[in-house]
Length: 248
Image 1: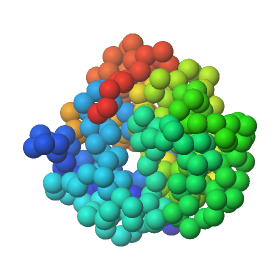
Image 2 (image 1 turned 30 degrees about the vertical axis):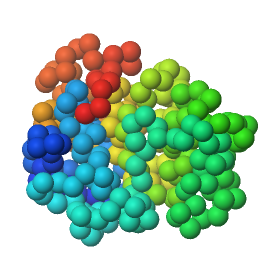
Image 3 (image 1 turned 90 degrees about the vertical axis):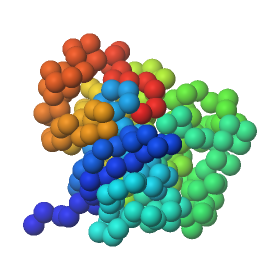
Image 4 (image 1 turned 45 degrees about the horizontal axis):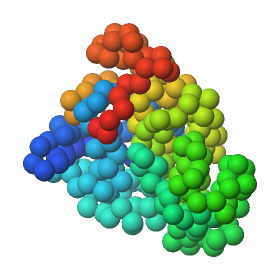
């Protein structure tokens, strides 16, 4: 028996300041999978995550999470139900220490010691920086902190927006190793990514977006060929050639 999707996006339309950015997007994400959402600048990838996370209300269509309608549900309530977003730009508080950034996540009901223990177990480097202000960390360490805050709440669905932006390839590989481990532990992950090949190394499913539409969805093993031949062109597939850097 096939498990029902943990996340369903049904014919979703969304707009910013009256300009439609999503034009009838459909998406189904099975539990325990890693789905890579790929596409060029302006494709609608980050807009899609904002709608799923409850940060942007769709103008039409529906989002369902864990079998229940999520459209119209606040981002805070969705987070308490296990849906967690790590935004583009990491979203850490630069003037707070590492441990203070982690304490922000105690709203989920866990105490400070539990949150810190979970974070440092997964990212030991952060334990060496716990009294350091987040703004003084390297870009890779800040992204680790952003992920650590998210996983400290034991999410069921983790949304990652541009995980590798501005980071060296060796750091990106390390972060994606953590993504793969989360999936093995049963966390469902949706990642919007600028480095297509890197994301596809850990993804089970791939989604290609263009102009606010999903133009292809299927096993990750099929997606690289679609990206390469359909519309992104041959120069975009290497780790040194991002699909797109700007917010989409």
